[in-house]
Length: 229
Length: 229
Image (tube, rainbow over all chains, first blue to last red; front, side, top):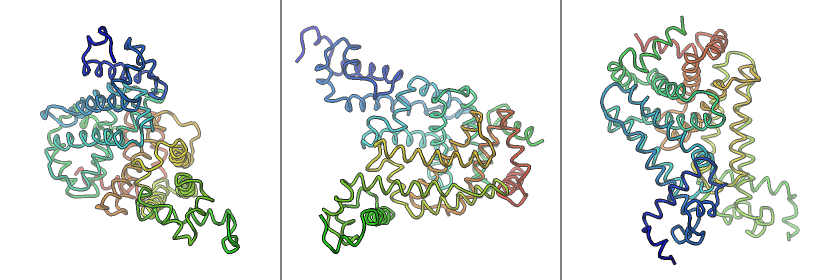
């Protein structure tokens, strides 16, 4: 299957190279528009050799998505120290870095890309959502979340996704503003839940107790008071 | 193709009947689990005759989805009179009625059902989102929305979707509470946007000016003040 020259790169190394090339191309154009020929050409190998490592475009796409999912899930990991608002803001910076780096690929995936509907693709997207959910629960120091807290966190994660997609469509609002705004949105959705439920109110008070006046949550409170007056 | 007895029902009438039966079955079980045999049996006709009206399960699914999409989009239509909060609350009641009536079908579609990835299915889901967006803009009396207003409305619509999906997964929170909470979330996301942008602040002040103290927005303000004290 391979010549002596091609053999220089091991199977795993070659697969990783092709995944890297695919992700690089998907970061500039939708996966739909990227052909196996292009990937082969960028790797300096033949089209049949690409198929030797990945039996079809879907399998290369899924491998690329797996690596991107692990990367993205990792960006929600944050040391559990200091106020929650500042932690969430650092997570949002890293999340938007990812969205910025993977624009067209991220957009195609979330809007219904070439492999949407494949159970493997859906499972990968869900695994990132679940990783983000577990991280945020851990930051709150909670292991058995009540239904209303689960709703706030999961629906906020979906708000983060949709905000990123809308941002990618024209980038009309500075991303730094959206990063802060999403942290503020987390506080706002938590506050709405807290006015409906005593358990959420207790949790919110506990989180806010440790927030400094100059953190994102303190900043929101000051801005809201100024807006209301 | 048809016997004399079967001819009694016209083509359009028979198609509408089959769509109705499909929607009824999809309201109790995921479309994945509903067979053409079952639909034929519920309609009292043969399996080949179902294929005469719809060349495959996907085409029947898409026809059912088209009718459901029109129904759902219609639920966002609301007379443009009275305070915005009360209008949004009525829309949320009707939206949750729909979600309640179409549970498994709605869930399967939004989570990646049998026809997800089909461009027709994606277009139908997007058409409902767009109809909801246009309705809300009209309620705000705005024809050329700034980017930040578009973001608030579109991201709120995605929050409504994800909240409904989470609710369907176990129904652990009363839907009436979620309906009010989503209207409150709209106000909260608008307020967060308003603390970042003067144009949004002006718009929010204009909307709130017409809100009565006993409407959903007045209720939220009173509850937040009580929570903060």
